[in-house]
Amino acid sequence: MEKKIDIMSFLEKNVKPATGCTEIVTVGISTCAGYNALFGNMPYLSSSKEVPTPEPKKLGHIEIVLDKRLYKNAYSVNIPNTDGRNGISLAAAIGIFLNINKTNSLEIFRQIEPEVIKMSESVLDKVSVVIDNGKQSLYAKSTLSYDGHNVVTVIEGAHDNITSISLDGKRLPLKRPLKARLTTTSVNMGDMTIGEILKIVEDASPEVQDELRRTIELNMALVVEGLCHFSCKGGIVHILKSLIRDGLISEDILTKIKIAVAAAVEARMGGVSLSAMSSSGSGNMGITATVPIIIVGQELDRPEEEVLKSLLLSHMIVRMASDSIGELSALCGASNKSAFGAAAGIAYLLGADSEGIINSINMVASNLIGATCDGAKSNCALKAMSSAAVAYDSALMGTWGLELGSQGIVGKTAKETLKNVSEISHKMDDIDDAIVDILRHRIKK
Image (cartoon, rainbow, N blue to C red; front, side):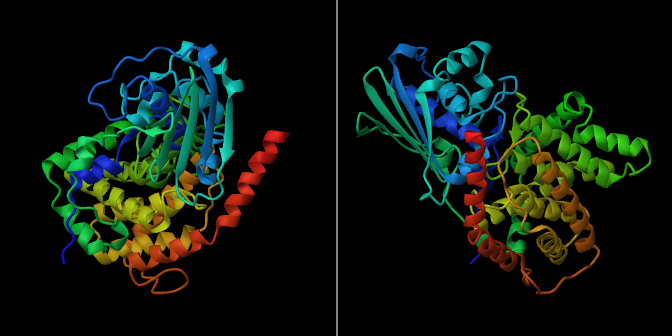
């Protein structure tokens, strides 16, 4: 039976603007939703209600409980609009000074003003962070005591998916966003074939294409920001440009891809206020999955419609990988999810058929799989840049007919390959434990 999917609902759920690393944003969302619920400003309202500014003397305690992977990714990354500050405790404190409905939830840190930072830092001694090693999927729970009340907020499965808010032990009614309720068909992308996905891509409506233009606008704005303000001496972009000037590398399409991806990720991890268009819950994955395609389209002067359809294919392949591997894992998402999407999208843009696209995805798996995630931070730009480069090379090889056959972790189809990657991912829990232990040891130092 042909699988049907509501593409606008797919984009609504999986392709959204995010300001800052989505793991640190999740921390802010959890405390923000909890504090706002005290005053009736529940998440997903069509308009925001005003809530009083928290009074430090009324604040008892904030406890944040995170799964180990969310903890790992939120540990070091800068918080947007805070002049380079970081920390899970600070993000939790900042959340109570924001309005859950004033912006899209993944963009709440756009609301941060200098006075918010000052007030948040004044209550840091009231914040504690706990890791729940029993949680195997994305999980965040905040417990906030304020003015004699206790509110508990739980986020599960996705970075902005609030599943419950309880006030003084009583669960509050929680409405879901209208568009989410309108979704008629839920399809696990991991169960789809490349042929089925390509048919959906080919039939993309003008409305869908309009929505995909936002991916270009947001992610290329981050590229420009990174080139203008983060190409400092000693940084990745600066060094790549120096290597071009000194004749050690050429300024070809591959180098332009690497510079653009590194610039965007450096800017985002550096805490700029601009939003990235995320893919399957991650802004860095969104950048890595789309910027290479946009650069190839520009350099080869491809029609806009082809570029937009290539971006849709990439987003869908990233979701396919996420459904197979999991929302968060021990594997780097840029290397083990976005690179698949970017390779597929570039191959499609170059005119590859389904076999060429499958070859390109398999090429990434054979080349790159196994890169671990040691937490979100500025040097994620290195892995993103390398992943984009492998995606481009894989697309070229796959489109021009290189077939690997079924060997190693590579299967006959993309589905088989991703299933094998998933098997590897689920066997790597000990690596995540080791990384978390390293971070904890660093705290003690």
